[in-house]
Image (cartoon, rainbow, N blue to C red):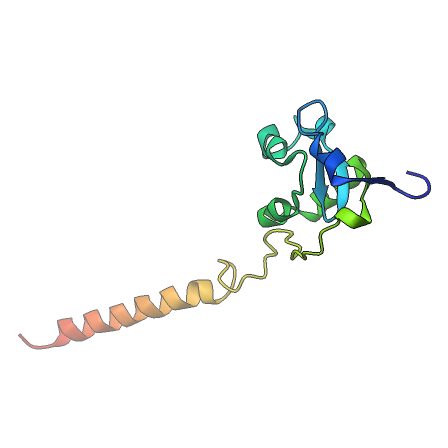
Length: 132
């Protein structure tokens, strides 16, 4: 889009809430997602529920990938009018990062079960070795 992006009032966005004209607002940017409805991995119903409104919270709650965020650029049609913009901030959630300390690949994922198994084996040997 050359030059300044087009500016939309929320009242205009609100009227675009069906399968033929599905506009959503994410982070004060307006997207026309009508052509993406059938391709959306979560199903078109998810987008249609948000059509005509601000979908920022729902978008971030799901945790969209960086690829999904890049794809959004194809559907960008303009910005929300400054008088209609929300000042609420949302934490960007790009989904699982693989840095979770509880992940199965970390050393604690196998060390604790190993320690429990060894303790059980030693307890069993001790009980068996006791005279009756």
